[in-house]
Image 1 (cartoon, helix red, strand yellow):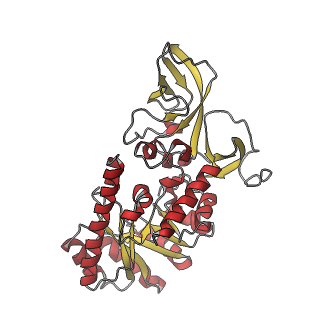
Image 2: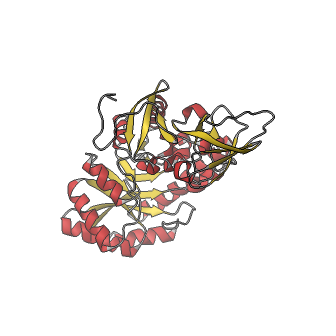
Image 3: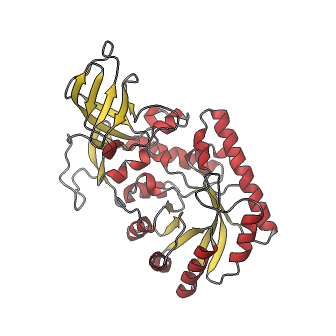
Length: 375
């Protein structure tokens, strides 16, 4: 990153910014990218990282340079930003419904290679109309419900019957299936995580076999959270994963044994601004900085680096309340603390940019290009 180059719309670089602020350790992030790319390549699995973790063209380009085949987004607005930034192979992993959204999808479909997911007849008809108007069939992945029941078809006859029905639509091309087995995050031990990934892969293989027996083409078998991707040696039959959180990691990843604290590239710096009672202190970072998301297997609202006995017990919008044993821990007004967030994917979307750090020094900024693109 060029220290002297200021991104348009950003202020002059401040190497000692006021708190609270978020930063990314570039060395750690690049190490995470390289490790994931190497492991997936070893097992012959393609990577289409989910950009919700960073929402940054700069970080997406690093992932693509390491071998990613494209990117995954959650919303059309994200796809629009990244297409404008020159990324031309995008999976939109959300059901697209409604005339306005279909119009936006058609514009994308005419300019880049876009793939979408589908799990309803109504949505499939809208997608088919997009493909017909454009004169190019729209690539679709049939979504399989991975157990969260937030969307997708059920394994067995349900998904097969749905695939048979929508393949008759003239404007779409079924290119495979997509699943998200988010319940994997309930597991904590290595043995349990590996078993969950094997179960996920087994269910998917059964669905793929059923679809192929029914004459449905399944070229892409897309699955995978960060846990599945990091344990991809147990994911037989999956051809493509969509890991996102692996880039920065967080308290949840550490508590599951999927990362060490030094692998957590995204951090927040906050300042102690009040000590109202012994053993109670307040920092200037609340839900608008750290997120109210809980970790899957630990208490509190973040891990304070180097101070495991100091807990962020609760958050208001602008305040974080620390609890500690004042006989063994001493805090002073003005102390700065470094926090690993519970859920890193939320943090960039709370900021126009996060600082970039190498060797402990701020060297630039990473713009959140798709900040607020939640529609």
